[in-house]
Image 1 (cartoon, one colour):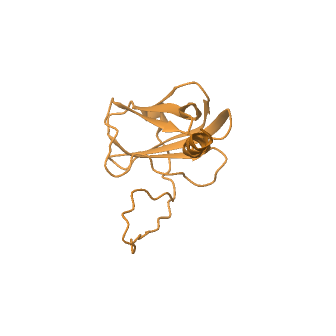
Image 2 (cartoon, one colour):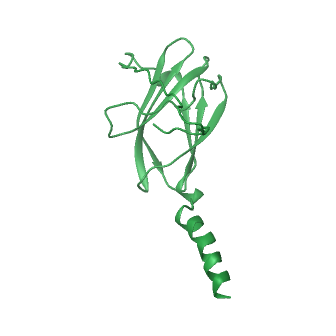
Image 3 (cartoon, one colour):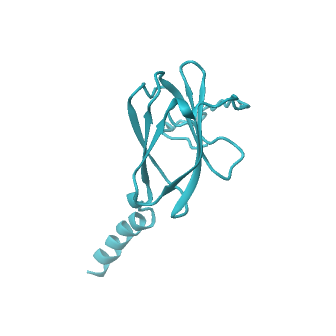
Length: 142
């Protein structure tokens, strides 16, 4: 009986240690209220001087008059975010200090009034990643 208890504990303990609570995530929906498709959306903490990750990736577009939802995680009950979108014409839309709080689904709507007067400055780098091991890599977080 003791061996079974120890084996069960050994099986359950890693699950408890690495368990993820989906309640830590908030659903954020972006709505494109403009007449152009949005090709890029950058989400950045409001206190950062850099734009955060591009969340549409290269395979998605937020079409005109459509919405698209994402789950995000942040450390505090409420956080401010800066959001930058670039449409199919290369025009930029920006929303600054948008507050997102735990437990509340947010809908962030882009409209022509969010059009930025100046384009943001981006400094891009190229990152080449090679897999030199025999094991397949499924995820890479940068």
